[in-house]
Length: 329
Image (cartoon, rainbow, N blue to C red; front, side, top):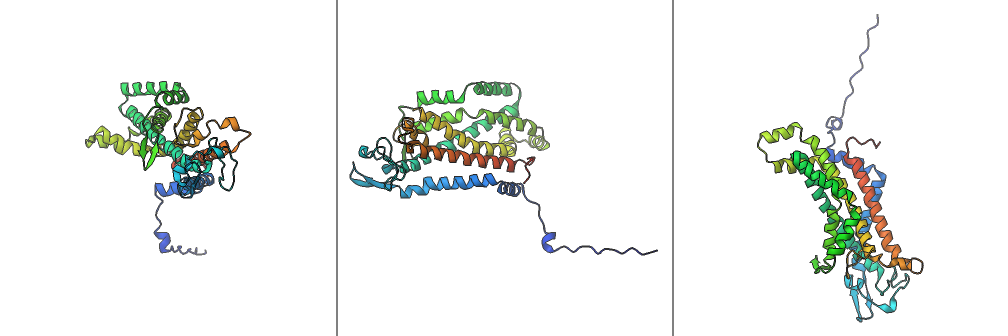
């Protein structure tokens, strides 16, 4: 009878013994970094942000009607009709518009306003959607019924129709506002509010569905037993646990707001006055689709790239923040 030989135990290094599991944030970050299209979208968005910020330092030119060299937004609004509809050249690399303004400068400062509208409207949308969905789910009963019937009524009305009506009746005749040293027409604030008010409904239903399950958890019952107020339970315990849909909705909401602003500006109902946006730069460009394609090509391309980049990032965030995602990373 042979005696069995014992295999010596493997010796682990100190680094292997001190292994720590990844935190949820670190795990989400690793999943996001393996999402190639999300990384591409992130790089694209960084380049676009650099374009509308750093590009303003290179935006200058000689304004013939004023007889001086202008910089920044003043150069973007310089009207020189003798240079109208000039094709791209060394002096105006993106060409000029129908009244001789430099399109390169206007895409820079128009991009700042378009991104401002997109981000602000998305934050407004997230605030309304999260608040209404959380209150409806937490209190239930007649509060839930009332808020959800209102949400469904809003969903049945085309958001673009509401946006056009709101911009038509409230977007004109408002005083200008000063923001970070820039003079903005009052229609910018109206567009932000109208887009936010007409786009919160889907998020509210998602938040409601999540909180309906979360409110029955043990830690919520423990919070009530300890005397926590309803406000504390909603904003400290429930909403932070629905962070993933909030972040994804905010990301994709920026793209939706930029497109919505472009819709109404293209119809002549968006941001008014000298304030440029990528959307209102397209207003009237349809008359020159073949003769002056640079009028619509550059602002349209920037809108396209921005929306693509945001959608790629939003898709990556959705997969990275979802622990039950079926994607194979």
